[in-house]
Length: 338
Image 1 (cartoon, helix red, strand yellow):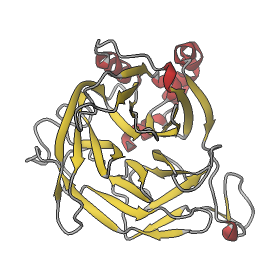
Image 2: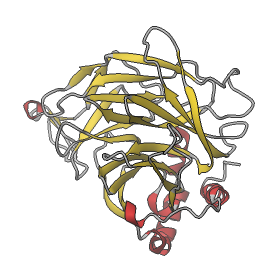
Image 3: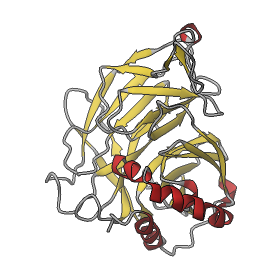
Image 4: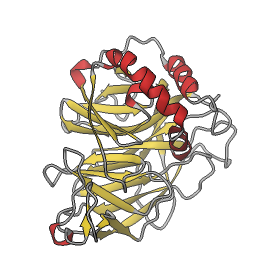
């Protein structure tokens, strides 16, 4: 979310991190820092997904305002450049007479507000569903065949699937419940989780709704189906389903959730969940999530910091809501929010 990223650039935030990260690191033992993505073109990480076709490959994209492009990364966070273009472009290390790798261009697309990405069944799904002002009427999902990042430098989107929330009638509405930064794919369907506010961008609110995309028409607006809700989850920013389909991982800035495969169809947010608190001063503003394997999660912040979490270290949720604690921590770090 771009306005938070601008805030992160302030000297105040950097001093706060230096002062607090050591003291609070002990509270983040289950969250291990792996590395920082050090490639300058990945300036505001917003989406991350592991390839299902190409080994040692992860797809990433920036937030709103960037070009319509994807970056392929290896497991060390280093950008993948097609070998036949290595003479023209450089990666993390600046090289004389070379330009930084611009990423894989997605033709016939625009990055209005790309917020998440999913990979399934040989396709990549890019969610242009960021809606900070809750007033967009051009939300949708780009679909493209997953390209080989070591052989291709641009790809054409197969289609754009326009979407609409069934319960939104005003733009913006009285209660802002129609922003989203999280999608996942299951059983030939895409699901979208919302990120809630009160009345305005800077008013925090708890809760998330789960919607299902049932129709995939490119020439008309596809109305989502609301299938579940959870009032305890705070400020959802990414989601992904485990490779074995057993766990849905959902993250926000201050917490990481695991939800088991539902007994009742589509009730993904209603099972016996696990929950882990995240400290903003340690992990930063988490915007991206994917599974490394069936037992390990990768989460990334806007500045490119990558962290690893083993699901065995995520305790079962005791039913006591923690969203007020998350709000309090968020407001302390970002006083502009109410």
